[in-house]
Image (cartoon, rainbow, N blue to C red; front, side, top):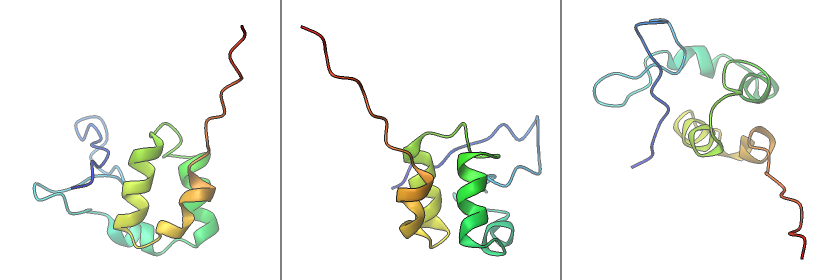
Length: 83
């Protein structure tokens, strides 16, 4: 089972990442009404910028847009180790 991001609903009960007790996305229409470019922007520069890549991938799979993962989940490139 995917590990979805669990926001603090006490601080923001209208969080677009909120899920019910069964793990179902509550504000699904919020995400489905967005264009692909807007979803990528929201996950990279907006409300989802602080999420881990694993949380972003799980969310994209859940809303039926797994093909956006390469754009929304930047690859962490580490510098080579010095000897």
